[in-house]
Image 1: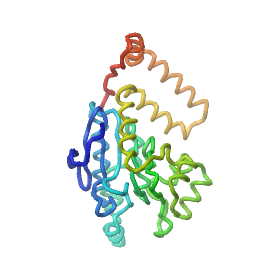
Image 2: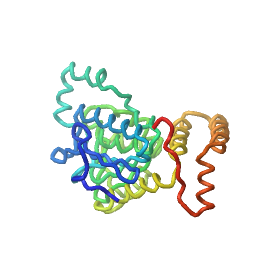
Image 3: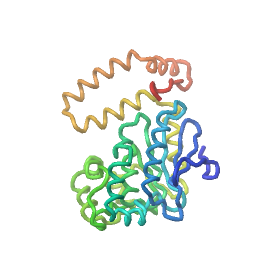
Length: 273
């Protein structure tokens, strides 16, 4: 079901996108620059995520890179521009989105990491719910090797994904890790040959789109992220309240009807999408 890059339409600065079977695929599309990001591209990417989340036809999002890289991080020219105080102010004051925006969406995000990801590129993969990685790819936080700190919430995300020790190792050293190590420490969920990564990620996302309640997925995402900052008693009490609401909701009845009739459920779009 995977649309080719040629079928995709421009979706902003350095981006392309296509939608099929309820899945919006977004490509970082500067292959000649290893899909490195300018500030405009970063902003347009977040705008593209918001647009996908607001589209009732979109039930899952796949993010990938054109060419051999997922995303090499911030464009070197953009980094050099940040030596100018005015550009630093623009980064802080004119970006227009909270850096953790992907966590606030209701639509699940699958990263098809088709090649190398470093710095900001790795952060974009971390904000996905599930990560598929090319066997040949290498990943690196890289910040410490540029004299920078852990950007865009990566110091919050990584310990929760791979544990404190592994997070410190990756962030303090900025070293490259291969796909085998990324899988071993839980940084990614699947490792595949490069030419299978996007297809498999899209198939996974299509299964979510076809068989999972959009409302349920949105609530589950919120439960996971908010639960990282709450105690067990609060989280389970919240789950009991949410369960009562879901039992009374239309999607539960539709799921039971689909099972009884031997068909896929016909879940409604998430409210507000």
